[in-house]
Image (cartoon, rainbow over all chains, first blue to last red; front, side):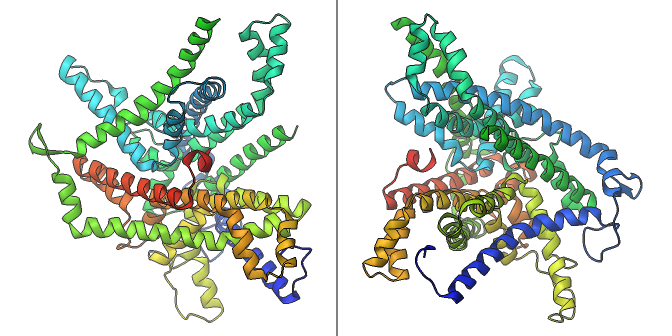
Length: 282
Length: 285
């Protein structure tokens, strides 16, 4: 079943047709979400009532567009702040992890590496509740001992950041480690021979080499945090990130406003993905 | 120089230990401890296995637990069956530009939030949705058809959501299979089916295993798809955890549920690795 092996015409047609159907299946839900963002109706469904930009720019009831809808805009802001923090933190820790696993041999390294991978195979909702329990236990303990109520340990943005960080760091570590493994250590030795200190060698030789992986990891971490739902759901307080805010609205019934937000999300993340690909190519 | 290396080692080890210790190990120990206690009266707790007894004897809990497991395995199997021919097409049949474009198309849904994907299926499948209208228009149905809120809709959503995580590892492993090996199989008299069984599938095994593990984990831990697309009686185990924690505030039982989910997923992942003789490092890293 490779091009050099002759196959009957009908087989090739059926196979090609199957692959085409598959890609239709992939495209279908995203296409309808995008198309109905422009429906001039209160519902994102047929019949088609005509084309409108109101779900993006409308400023009067009943068609308030994305750019005039306070709740959604605030949620986007919250998500961006959370995603920014998660991306920075996880890439920083991912860097130190990559160097640790790449440069040092120590007892228990294998076990530590497996432990480092575990967050990927723990269901997101379990990660969420375990962190919720731990922080509440800590907060209650502090209250019992010192009568101090630490709001930061109650459900809220700090816990959301920590919850997402707890598994996104693994992904950042894997991305950066993969690149570091391809690094030629003799380049660093050359820098040392030429009189550089170890830190200077790493800063001027290794870090620039790792740059594409670091930027890739930042973008992936940002996107994963922005789109995370399960872990966030268990840890969220009163400030809802975008996915939670959209979920709450979706439960109450949807208007094309949600389609408009979704379309903008799709455009935003495709743009980011494209940037990474272009950057990696260079 | 030795002490230098030692300081560097400690500096690099600290973030890792803090991260894993404070956010993974300690929280899970806390969760285990909470699940092993029973509330006697206000603020008074006793160590007991009451939560697990409750979870294992109440028919609704037990049924939901096994249903979630079985449905997740089913979703994984369906995803593999659908993805394999496509991955093979991308890796072996398509060449050059087309190959890259098809691969990119597979990645796109991943960059879109799961919420958006689920929302798309809701628009398609609901009573006033596209499919229902299409069926009426073609005369296959004479009134609106509700296709949401049942197991089939949920399965469509689960498979869709995790498709990418199956296609990508499969394409990667299949690409590394040399065309001449397949040709040799044919030259030695093998038919299409025996080449598939003796050469292609064994070679793709690492990809199959890692794809299946990730898809299974994602299905098992999914909350959105069963909630939004599934019906009243297709309760998912994650929904029960959510209900105990947020709606009922019964953290003890919720923690026990969480632990059961964790054990279930670990056992199945471990079993899959064991069956195929692979390690977690090879599969994930």
